[in-house]
Image (spheres, one colour):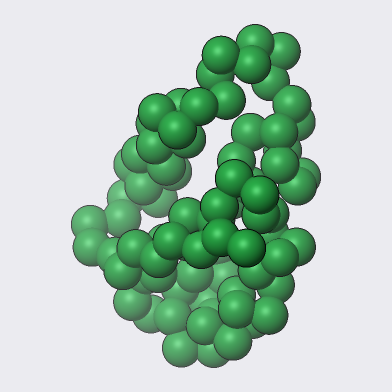
Length: 82
């Protein structure tokens, strides 16, 4: 995550990674706390050994884990895809 303030949680598309969002993240992090991650097998994330884990449901579960770990109670959710 980057920045401070109200949380914006970015769901990047399955064809995107942090690299595609760098300008958006830089801009938003001036006013907000921006939370983002690369889905399994994208960008800096490793390819899972079991590709059955690289699903939409798996990504939702990963997002929930991040939200829980960061103790996010309220956020703006932003979906992005190229």
